[in-house]
Image (cartoon, rainbow, N blue to C red; front, side):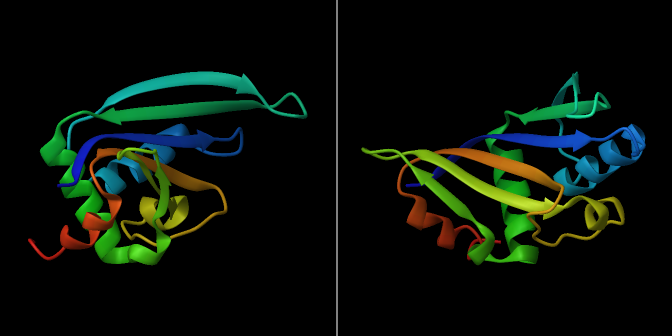
Length: 133
């Protein structure tokens, strides 16, 4: 039985971006579920400030809700699997930050909102997640 335990979302807000808009993109991806936020400012290669935003969703029901919603829009082919021997691991998705800000969801590897779902069990059971919606 697959259990999605928690979701960690990571996104970068560059000096040319409005942090409030980046946060709106994250909120749109998460679809109204509760989350905790940590922000850290780091320096880019040319000395420009980059705000690294990490959000954590700890409620398993909310994690499943987000997973179902994102996969419904981007498809299972966009899911990266990091399986640990003996079961469990992480499922990775990357969605377009600009589209997310506009209220849409599309997969993207360029300047994405990164989603990392921690799980227990067999990752292949993720295909059943959408069957029960």
